[in-house]
Amino acid sequence: MTDEQATGPPAEESAEIGELQARVAELEDQWRRALADFDNLRKRVARESATQRDAERARVAGLWLPVVDNLDLALEHAADDPSAIVEGVRAVRKQALDVLAKLGFPQRSDVGEPFDPTLHEAVAVVSVPDTAAGTIVQVVRPGYGDGEHLLRPTAVVVAKGD
Image: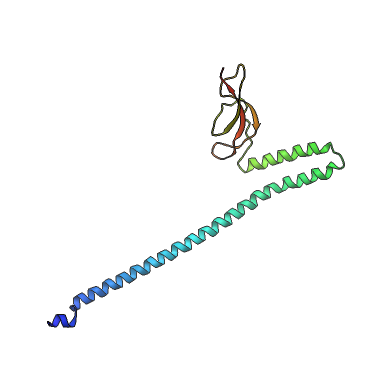
């Protein structure tokens, strides 16, 4: 047995192995810290997202409160003058449409427009003289929103070609 075998690796190799082990430990520590930072970021984003969602829900609900208040008033006055309720309901409907428009979903009025499957849902096709094929001739159920932010498509009756 040689002296080198009995005493282990030379001092140079031991120092190099020690440096590599220290570097591995340092990199492992950095990796664990990065992992912890990422987990904290994920949790913070989830909390902020929930907070934003709650704030937006509260904002939307707040926009609807005057509509509910006016419905209550209309019902309250209905006992005094039943014919007044129709006018009250019309006013509340207009107010509700205004709220939808403020939220970015205005009511669509598409009669006379060409049918667009991204905005419309055809519920019937009818023959209409002097009307171009694919033209909307009747709105069955109004749609709300625009092309990019569509809440509901407009249900329409479309003219067919003869």
